[in-house]
Length: 207
Image 1 (cartoon, rainbow, N blue to C red):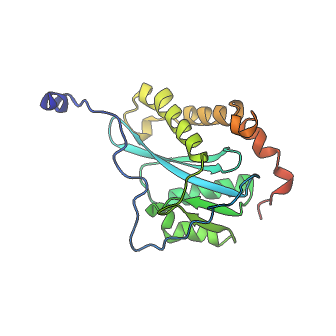
Image 2: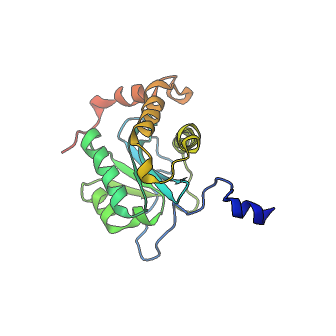
C-alpha cells in the first residue's frame, strides 16, 4: 500500500519543515512576558509563521498579531524562511500601526537573525523570545485557528500548484473577516478590530 500511495503521489497533509528551527550561531533573547498583564493595543506584538504545503513544494505564511486584541496586523507569504521576509512584514506593521513596546517571537532562525533583531531593537522596542519553560498565551490559539481557516477553507480546497499560482486576495479576505467580523469571548464579545481600536488613544504612533 505504501508503494502504491507513493507512486500516485498521495500523502497526508501535515507540517514537515520546522518553522522554529534555531540557528546555534544566533543570539537568543530572553522571554519578557512571563507574569506580565497585557491589556492594551501595541503593548506587545507576536510574530508567528506557519508552513503551507502546495502541490509542488511549500510556502511559509507569517503574521504579526497584536497580543491584547488578537488583531492580525499584517501578513506575508514567502518561499523561504529568510529573515528579510520577517523584517518586511514587521516593518509594514510599523508603518500602519505604530510601534509596540515589545515584539515576541519564537527562536526560529528568521527571528534571531541580525537583520530582524536590528529592525526591532533599532527602534527602541524590546525583543522577547519564547524559550524553555515559557508559556504561550491563547493569542497563539487564535492564530492557529486562523491558520486552519486559511488552509482548509482556501489552500487545500484550491490545491494550488505553486506559490505563483496562489493569489493574495483570498488570504487577505479570510484574515480581514476573522479580524473584523468574528467576536471573541475573551474580548468581551468584541471583534479583534474593535478591541484594538478601542485603545488607540493610549498607544504610540509611528515615528
